[in-house]
Length: 444
Image (cartoon, rainbow, N blue to C red; front, side):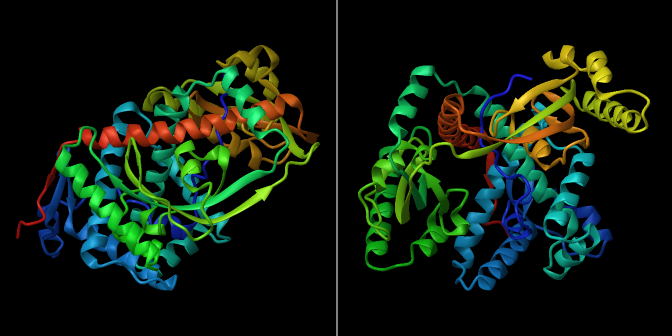
């Protein structure tokens, strides 16, 4: 496997976060609604010939309103929340359609494993998860689609951004020198993004700029920035009040760091322009971490068998074969090493699939997540990554001190993450701009 560095984004978020994700449910046809005795749903938007219905948006709005109230927050106006949800759904539909074209949508078997993992992370069975969702008014099928949306977004990010980012040794040198032994700043930032099209006209820019400056004045006058974000922001985290969470300076775009570096917690920076649009940035809090020499990290020694999975048919066949390999190994019919030498398509096949000692961040996210969950001596279920389908075995774990090589790897990882974030945001905006979107909000 040709590893690249990227900080894993948790695909399996908490149930609450997944409830806030964009639904990808295909609406029931009008004929089926009539036969089921349901009122005919109304199409309010079309994305590349795929419909979004009023009921889908209304259901999502209701869930979000309940969620915000449970958090003790006042939901935005119904109109504003519907606009936010509809735009999120349009973007998600466009991404899902593209993901289907390029073959990165999760398979039904992967979805079964993902749902089981969410249930396990919340200390319940799948049936208990079903019951909890039903109690919250969320259909289980909708929940599965929300998880599919999370996984799809991760895979598109890896395909369209992470895998295309290049980091030079000169950039790594500069990053290592910049971090040095100085205290490492961490920022908690919230943002409001007012998107601009790829080639905006002057009138659009002026209108957005006027709105941005008005929002800065409101925030400075004491208005709740999180409420303003939920009402106006077009960023993915808008409904979380614009919060980006805690990030070190090397995990943020330089534009962000430059805007908030001299602010005091609670202050909002002047409007800044980025490729995606106009941004309002609030410094929620700031702290420093002084790096300690010899800090401990966990290295894992692992091996794997890799089979190609470029098409759905190949993926299904690879999964079947890897499950057969696992049963054979567990029954003592063959060793992992011999099967890797015979069948793996990775360069490690000649070494029985042995990848050696792996530092955090040295493998792709899907592979690393599965590997780090495995106890020593256990074999994974088939794991899909951009390289194909893997069967993974963890051979050993060991604590180790950060070496100069690991410091450079961490610097490279931070740079890759930063560039990938910016590249994916740009790609997602361009995909949204290319999509044919027809609004039918005014139709009866």
